[in-house]
Amino acid sequence: MRAPLLAVLATAAALAPVAGAEPMFLSRQYARCTTCHFSAAGGGLLTPYGRMLSRQELSTTGATESGEPQGREHEFLFGLFKDGLGEFSAGISLRPAHLRVEAGSFSTTRNFVMNADLMLAWRHGPWTVYGEFGRQPRGDDDKIDSFEHWLSYKTTGGFGVRAGRFLPAYGVRFADHTSFNRAALSFDNDDQVYALELSHASDRRLFQVSLGPGHAESLVDDQGRHAFTVTGRAQFDLTPRTVVVASGLYRAEADRLPSESALGAAVGFAPTPRVSLWGQGDVRFRDGAEGEAWVFATEAGFELHRGIWLKAMPQLRTQFGDFGAGTLRLGVGLQVLPRSHFNLILNYYHDRFRGQDASADTVLAQLHLYL
Image 1: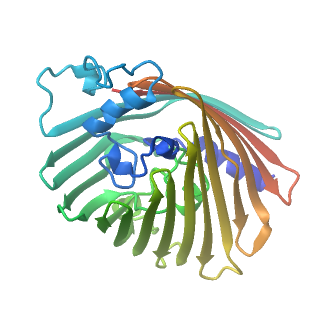
Image 2 (image 1 turned 180 degrees about the vertical axis):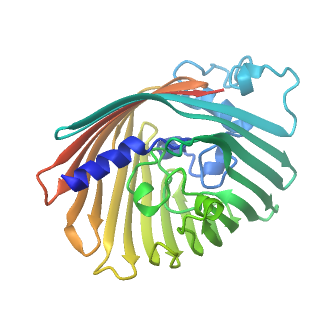
């Protein structure tokens, strides 16, 4: 029962701040995260255009017949600042949640605030300054801190440079930070790195490379996990609703961890404006391990009605050197986006631990308030 119990405890402890992107919106022909977000890797603060788009294109009742939003409901704090914020943008993200986990004789139920964050950005010409501030869960020692902050510069020719603390670009950033293509590859919400990122974007291609000393929290607290890290990501927009992504990762040996590398490929396809299909496969290599490990993560989204999405999320994670062992996850979810400032999320996961007669069931309900 040891492996299932550890997995359950990890799930129950995965209460890091959440601010994810939604790859399912490829069905609306939005292939790039920067269409709506300040961060090129997705997630975090929405741009003013992203706020407007979330009301007009994504919410159930926020759209207008003219195509132009009436009023200022979609703006920061419902348009409290009558003259706007000028070159500044701000957002507040609150996410109360209910978690229920069962694995054999073990069960736990928790009601908690998953995140309470303030996000700020200042954009002037080619320059962007970005920061997120909020509660960082650390067991019994939670504290208010900035878990993402960076400075970027982008030329009119599409070349960009970014430096600071952020999640490096790799694969598809599903909103669910516990998905195997995120958590299993150390791209969870508290896995930011300190790094320098170079990028080039054109109409149909995006290239990103980052390198730096590694895991940010380990550098701050001297946890022995930080190691020189390099990631690379290449995105090709074959059509407005078809995307192919190739990724690579290398982490050098740390004081407490061996060196590790990974290669991944992902495909996104939206055959209709109501259907979005994503799949990602990754192979991992670890120094000293006998053989490789694999990660497969998929997400299929279907819009039942405007702003009401049903999701299926089958995933597989194998152990190093043993393809028959690991975890098979079957997940389903319902996401409702009534208005631009809040949405409801209900997810159910069934994790089966391969090679063992054990499984775990998780229910996670969230109310996301984006002010």
